[in-house]
Image: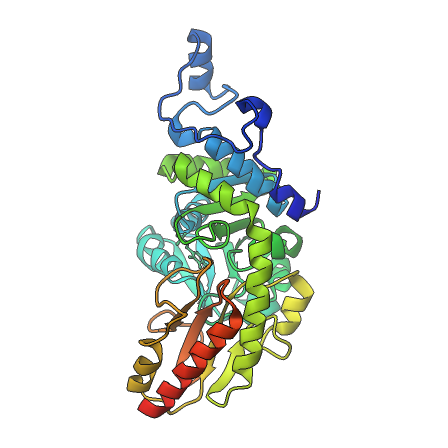
Length: 389
Ligand SMILES: *Cc1c(COP(=O)(O)O)cnc(C)c1O
């Protein structure tokens, strides 16, 4: 089955539920055993299905199987948030004295986890230039255990040469972890590009409706035991109700993403032609930074990208632009049906490299509105930017 078809079949078992199309919500903490033999099997780890709510009810395990299938993995682990997936992935593979190579433009909270928790536990964290490519080999040390990629990266959307990085990392015995939230299970094949452990925030396009926080780890068979143990010990499980919403989001994920991409491309083209704009960082836009890598490695693009304004606009101008938009909200997260526009505040989020653009950088999530309305709204915003600067 192709992925579009898969999305309409996975997790549906009408025969088990008197013909009802969708899987009911299995809320549960206690799961009862029929006899002592079953209880003893649970204690010794040989019981064939989940033994306790935190290990997942059917609401969770069906979603995990669905996500693994979609991403071409052997196993999926659904977590309470994207951050829980990142934390579990890193904790499962790093110990005191180990060295982690983390991409400099990683998701902000991931950086905070590395600088806060991992360093406190004695892990050596080193940030590297997202555009390093095969040059990563010069940074890999005897104790480097994990090389972490995120392509494109958060906020500044640099495309990484993941196959080149993975090749050098694997040659030196490192595990490659990658954040696939932007590419999604539909547009980027993590495993074909050398990623061993793929991590996603399902909060974004799997949910698609800004009503859910959830994460995902997918992997091939050899990595599952370490990950599942760390996941269970940290108690990072999702709720059954959240899993139901995620499964519901999956049904329309392919059509939503197509529309996000079409709208985003239209806005990216328009922005590129505006005199106020210095550069547009939408990898699917011909001529944009990283377009060649996107064309080589991805089969589609989502609705999230950034653009840099020319130098010289004032903070008052920026406020006049952003405070009075009708079609864009200003808030965290992305991947919902609605459009968002936020300033990019790099602050302390970058240490290995310097963002070269001097004007304000803005991050846009293009939703499912008619793009012409979004363009009109932005156009009025640019007028206010110029008038108040
Ligand atoms: C949102 C996000 C995360 C974290 O996901 P949560 O579900 O919010 O915990 C991780 N990586 C990327 C790229 C994200 O955008």
